[in-house]
Image 1 (cartoon, rainbow, N blue to C red):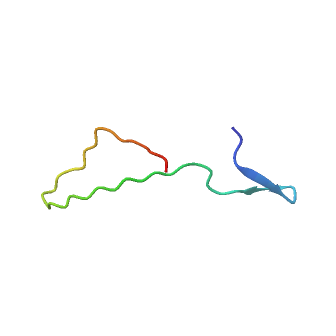
Image 2: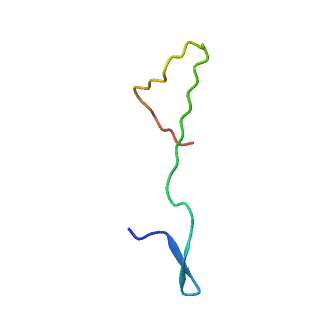
Length: 46
């Protein structure tokens, strides 16, 4: 797959980010220091 570039005046110009980004944040609200442990994830488009 070629990189995401656009020619501008005969020179390549980067078009920026062309992928996907996903983040997951977990916080132990008990204060006991339990680690985050996930056995499954699901994606449901809006």
